[in-house]
Image 1 (cartoon, rainbow, N blue to C red):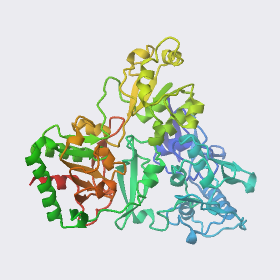
Image 2 (image 1 turned 45 degrees about the horizontal axis):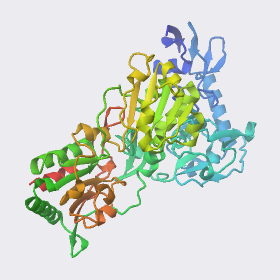
Image 3 (image 1 turned 30 degrees about the horizontal axis):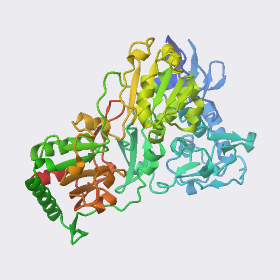
Image 4 (image 1 turned 30 degrees about the vertical axis):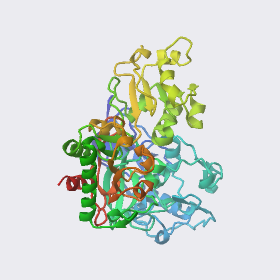
Length: 591
């Protein structure tokens, strides 16, 4: 791009060909007021707050006006302030904006802008429209009284999530934000990703869980990683008084998409299971609270008895691949030292596969062909589904589906080859054969990207795309758990041990809701079982010793996401008294 020189507020500034005046101002460190501007979506200039004055007195919106060589721009003057304040007063008069009763008071961009422009009254008569509040959704509330029609939520839903739930109905002063043409949120096509709530500049859309529990300035913001799937989305944990109030997408993260799914934003905090807060040991067939010393002693004794009676190979360590790499490495070290080096597994681990370069989420939007293989990968990795939809819709990317998939993806696919889990690897091997409907698409692809999820297997794609550019094809392997690749890097696999033959099992479950007694492959009458878990589950009810574990928001560590990147978990709050992490437990068992 060629560089452009312009003058902003009497000083020389630089811009790039294609930049808007707003972008040039940002480069120059000038913060223009905005309400409708949102990074990542197209600008529409609807709020009129970013107006600037050009040479000759012309007023224009900075977010929609491209820079030109030699342009002269004024961003701050009495005239501009008066125009902005007048427009802001009209926004206040149009709906029912009562800051003292608003859920967003103190965190509202509209309110902050009123203070910035010195607005202490509204000169225009209020319209006081009678509008309804939609409280049907389980996680969010939509209050039309606070809506300023900036359309940030609408553009985010359409352009970032590619879901198209939101729209505008009616015209002029009667214009209203519409959900599927008039449906309540609960009955709509809403994906419950919460993106609309996070980008709303006012109190029109707000989170049920965190509302009225603290302004952002009163909270601690901790950057961490979502552990709900192997994509490892960057998150910002909003905490106050020892509680995490909500999970936001980390919009500043370089390896992020700015999106979260329902599980990551809402369900990761909304677990209703009973928390394990004190060690438990089985006495006379019943789990009873005991001290940490007694619990560790009982666990150590049970593991030692099995080892002495049946040999070291009869005692195994099992962990969830949702745990951090450090916790998994600690388990492996414990097993190597105290038992047999190969007697540790991580349920959900995936084998390393490095014949094809790793794909990133940004590669999804650069690819000209996406082949998605597996059993509805987007059900467990919803953000991947959002990005695939975006690529097809906005870039015309060819989509090939092998296996089951959501209806929306099936409708957009060029080719859909239904196959169950066992048939998927064979379907992949036959892609390049003459007569296969996928073969012409592969032959024409320049930037092909393959998304594999369990149990798609490991297939080499290099020969199937002879026309691919250098560095392509690329592969995104979606793991069963958040740290499936980290488990492999720590030297743990998902198989290789006869768990049914074990006489004692040490299980590090953490806060994994899917790690059940069935996952241990044991019939009733199982051997001695020690479980380190955050919640009471059918697995803990079968245990002989239960040790309380921290939640993901209460501990720090690293994971390796599906893109092959090391990402960080950071504790936002302290665990309850008496809760110990995996390393502490293993150290105690070793002593």
